[in-house]
Image 1 (cartoon, rainbow, N blue to C red):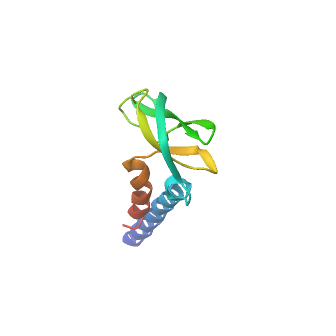
Image 2: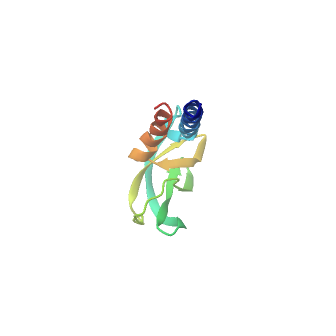
Image 3: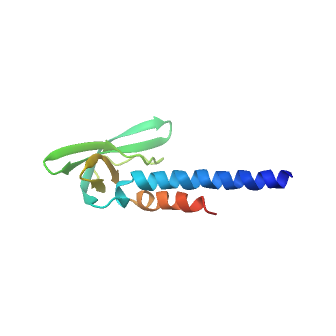
Length: 116
């Protein structure tokens, strides 16, 4: 009887993880049609916890200067002034993200993890 509940719990947990990955994919500018790529510059960084840093990046989208804080944290302080590749959708450039292995593969990995 307990094994049956464990089976249902693991299935439910898998669906939650899969849903979280699907939401990341839906909200990620990488997977939207019409996404553009440009160069940006790390202007500063924000620290939301003791040892994690989120870079604050600026880039030009048309005539507008856009500044955003990356949603991906690192325990390494970002190098201010460093050029980075930025991906964004013209309809919502404020939702831009730094193009990296995490921004490309992490949402898909989380969605696939839910199927395992």
